[in-house]
Length: 102
Image 1 (cartoon, rainbow, N blue to C red):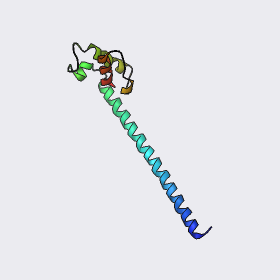
Image 2 (cartoon, rainbow, N blue to C red):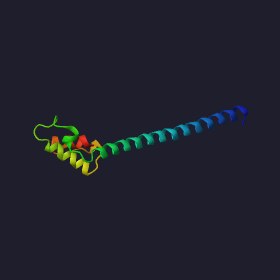
Image 3 (tube, rainbow, N blue to C red):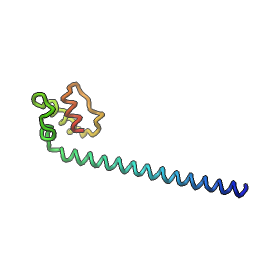
Image 4 (tube, helix red, strand yellow):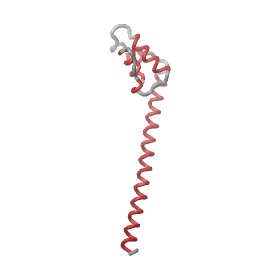
């Protein structure tokens, strides 16, 4: 192997190692961001643990008595739902309350 080839091979190895280090760093940063988001959701849910839908959101989205919103909110709270993609149901007001908790 010529000196030029050895040098090129050395640079390729250095670049590959550098790329691997950057990838590992990016994965750690991403994992830290997810952990921070999970902590924020847990804190928000903890702060809402003793609240009802009406205490948290008020009456502005309710057409009558907020019972559907309250039911969805309470169901999501009881089941510790934190992903709004899980919000579904037969009643728009139930889903709204569910979504507002998640």
